[in-house]
Amino acid sequence: MKKGQTPALKRVIVDFKKLDKHMLNLLVDKFPDGYDDDDIVTYRNANNEVVECVEVRTEDTAYLVKVSKRLVMAMEDFDESDNDSEDESDLNTDELEGSEEE
Image (cartoon, rainbow, N blue to C red; front, side, top):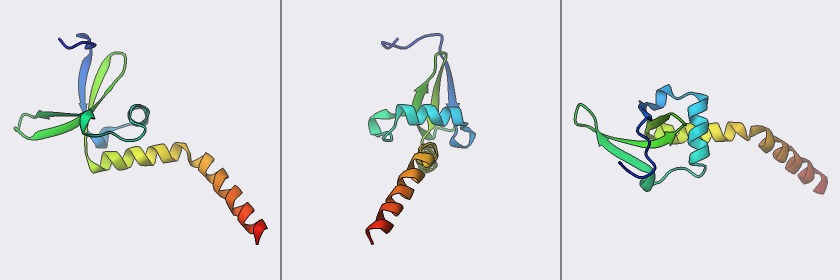
């Protein structure tokens, strides 16, 4: 058994299409700048196809989230939507400052 691995952890494979806000939040928290090749777990499924995932853990479950371009876009969109109110206030301030200078 690998160091840090808990035998009681339930392992769940999750497809991008089935991610909820909680899972997206976990992914964004763990990979705020995105994930790289070192974070990817690779395995072969029952059809002998190579599947690439990133792992996110909660107290009782290890989730393997299938990697795809859509996952990257969803993480970016989710992170941006959390910061929309901050971005909008910054944008409005910049617009006001720009109009005063003219």
